[in-house]
Length: 331
Ligand SMILES: [Zn+2]
Ligand SMILES: [Zn+2]
Image (cartoon, rainbow, N blue to C red):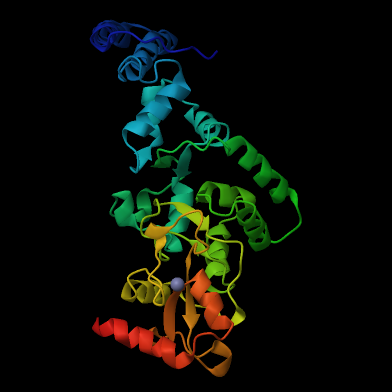
């Protein structure tokens, strides 16, 4: 049944198509329904051949899946409608090819559904997607967010598959998966899969950061340089109880005020290197939550993990921290 589309000169195909359509005029006037329907089959074939011949030779000439990938790579970070993929692929079952590209080949392709759930949890903003309304974000749109092909993808999906089968809660499954992939870019598709496609995955992932204090970064929780659509567990460690429960909106403001750098030593993500124990930034409550310290700008300070440990082992006093904030305000 499935017919492979045949690539040819687009102009050649356009003329063929036109001939068929012109001939169809007679059929429309004279023939019975069945002859009319059959008369359109060649038009359908040639139309598909034309669509799949639009990409230049060498860019995805090897098959439907290659053409889909070539097209997405031509327009990365762009919301692409499934119908466009149908045209370039020359087939209507492109959704299966997308799953293969994601699962076996490690391309970071998000579906509209996942994007929408990320927008709802402020892990993505519509400006980043180049759209004006979330309405367009349906199952049948796609977004390649990263041109980096993850060679470990098959292994990762297998890992996700095993965790997915367990009886743990959605939140625990997500956490377990992230802890097995510290420092790696994880896509919303992986997390949604873990959650058995339950839409709560995005909310739970956010809660792991804002309530449980896991250093899960997104573009909008302090790591502006991260690709739209990815999640990162910075380090396998949960914030001390008094440093949990910081809303993202406050977190972002504090990080901005502190220029995304440790207030004590000046470290930031740009200085990251393997031999340095400083890996990531955390927010610290100067007056601890338990002592009625609040989630306010004045009570929060950005520290690298090393300075933060120092503070907790009492090598830095509250006064010193307050001084660090005010000193830098003026400087
Ligand atoms: Zn520091
Ligand atoms: Zn702290």
